[in-house]
Image (cartoon, rainbow, N blue to C red):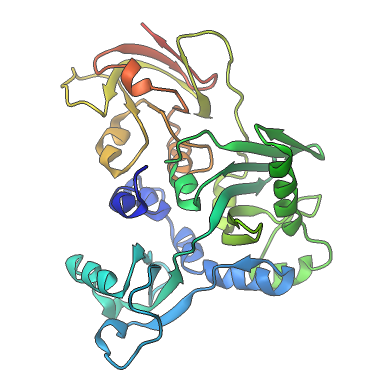
Length: 354
């Protein structure tokens, strides 16, 4: 299994992807920069738990008298800009010395930033979930690993799915223990008598059943404690009509899970080999999408990957770009070679070799 630190530079933030594909705006940046303010309000009014950050002064690296946090511990870092319309900078899983070196190597001008937000790297996380509550229902994915794997679509097993429509909660590949945990998570997002306060403080919106609309990232510790990593209202607006797509379960040669609908015919570019291809429509095949694939993604007519999920950051981007996208195609990097011609039906989740 690839470690988080090795993957860091190849799995950037959602803001990075949005900027690269020109889908960013000041509202999305501001929402991202102020997520802990919203989580604090939810903690105060709904009693949810969240990873509360420690604020460090922007000169922390260079003031020898400041020892607010242990120097050897690992943290997730966020450098908060003075202007809320500027994206924050992230560093993942670094101690004080490593973070200082990273800032220097990347020529970060700290005078343009207000402070550091650091969150201790949390151990004991057993499961994680991404939950979208929008105008069509509740849509959730859960894995037995850290939230960063689910958010970036680099988990090794297909996520467990759950969705709520027409007042009925449905489960896919969820055992009884998972089902109880999912119900417990959703209960924390159902608001009875504090809707007006939440609307007044953070402009929250709600479904007719009283659920808090938004995009949520959640971690579950081994002892069953539920901790919220994110509550984002801009992503809910971006995905307000989202719903899971059903895949065709026939006996075609290759099939996976539909993420972005659409069809395409083209020549395969298998990212695991370096063979050259002719010009024309290209369909990218990979194990999981990282920044290594950025040049290919911009030109691709469709994308097929072995790993991934519907609520990951890159899935949000490809849905915005309306690029057909199928995930969970077992061993596809071995079955399709560069130069193969295929028909991709991402609406049905199927691939036919021509």
